[in-house]
Amino acid sequence: SDEKMAAVQTFRDGEERLIAVIGDEDTVTGFLLGGIGDCDPRKNATNFLMVDKSTPLSAIETAFRSFTTRSDIAIILITQAIAEDIRYLINEYNQTIPTVLEIPSKDMPYDISKDTVLRRVKQQLGEN
Picture 1 (cartoon, rainbow, N blue to C red):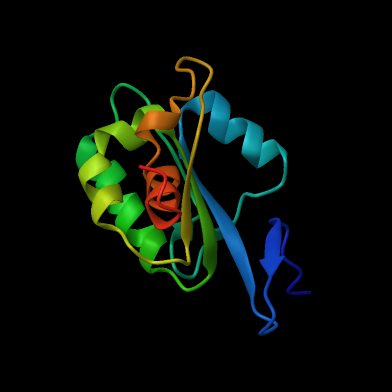
Picture 2: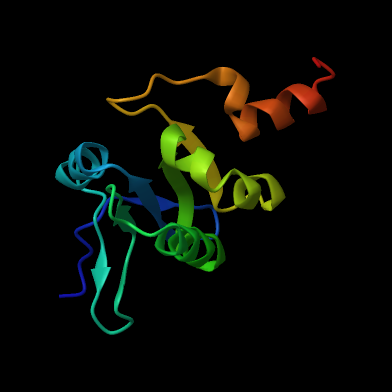
């Protein structure tokens, strides 16, 4: 059976898309335990990146670029601490899907003033 184990979003066009996560070990583990994990051995691809102190910045950049160009991903969740490391990539990213959402982590509280998506929404609503 081709049954997917990962949690997916079904869109109006009938396509199913994944949620991707870039975060620290605790955050990614929590989401994986929640059922969002997907691993495609044919493409050697997953929908998550677990980041720790030894993870090179280039690996985070590569994962972000990969997730933002994959047609099977609808949402990218990234902890705000890691988003700060690649803020320049997030700021230049302007697609609607996949949507990039910044989330808090255990080690760093959420700072609304740093959230690129919320800043763009406020600009659109004229709330600057």
